[in-house]
Amino acid sequence: MNARRKGLAAVVAMASLAGTAGAAHAESITAIGIGQVKVVAPAPLTNAKIVRAVSVARRAAVPRALEAARNQATRIAIAAGLQPLRVLEVVETGPGPYGFYFGVGTLGRFGPDRYCGRVQKVTRAPRVDGRRGRVISRRFVTRCYKPASVAVSLSVTYDAVPVPVAPPAA
Image (spheres, rainbow, N blue to C red):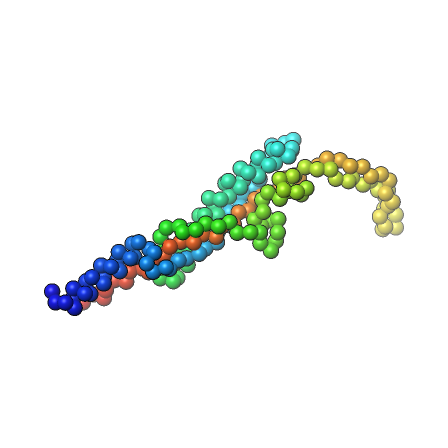
């Protein structure tokens, strides 16, 4: 083998090693995945039961969010001519523009992890001439409000390498 071919063989060998290591080229893919799970709490509702149900739903939503992020990263990689490898970073993203309904599963109606509390119940007289009736009584009652579902949003960064291109057939 001449010197030029030896040098080319060394470069190809180093490039293949760098491709398997993944850190030499600093290419990455970041994808966002969202997992949503329905909250199921047994009746009668108490704060402890709702907190437990939200926790269970949240634990079930995380793998769904990771799977969604992996699928999204694969679609991005195919479009970019890359191959996703190992996970570099997983970050739970903050709430979206829709506040409570997206990403914050532990915020209850009465505060963090507080789903039961006192609310005012108003009794009114019947409507007269299309107008609301006057207030007859006001009293405070304890009510529990269970969220319908919990959503988890994760931003996952994958290490990526270019897909090897087969040399043209001679």
